[in-house]
Amino acid sequence: MAKQVFINLAVKDVQKSMDFYTALGFTNNPQFSDDAGKCMVWSENIFVMLLSHEKFASFATKPIADTKSAVAGLFSLSVDSVDEVNNIMTNGLKAGGTEPNEMRDYGFMQQRTIEDFDGHTWEIFYMDISKFPTEQ
Image (cartoon, rainbow, N blue to C red):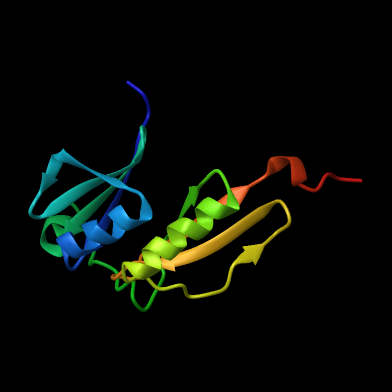
C-alpha cells in the first residue's frame, strides 16, 4: 500500500467547510464521509479530514486549539503554476476564505496564504526548482 497523508482538522461547520475545500480544488470521498466528517481528497495520497469538534475530540487527548487566534500548523500545497496558485486563491476567497498577507515571491517560489472559516492556514505555492539559487 502506498504511503498516504491524512490531515485531520476540527471544524465548526462540516458542510460549510466541505464547500470551501471543494472551491480550493479538493474532491469529497463519500466512502469515508458522514455527517460528522468529510474526507477531502487533494491527490492520490493526500487527504484532509474535516471533522466536527465532537468527532475530532473523540480522537484527541488534548483540547482543540483555537485556530482563529493561534496557529496550530501551516499546511502547504504545491501546484503546477503561478496561475494555478492565483485561481485556487480566487476560488477560496470567493468561498469565504481570508488572505492574511500578500503574495510572497522568493524568486524560485511564489506563495499565497489562505485561511478557512476555522482559521486553519494553508500555503498555496508554485516552485520552479531551476530558479533555486545555487551556492557560489
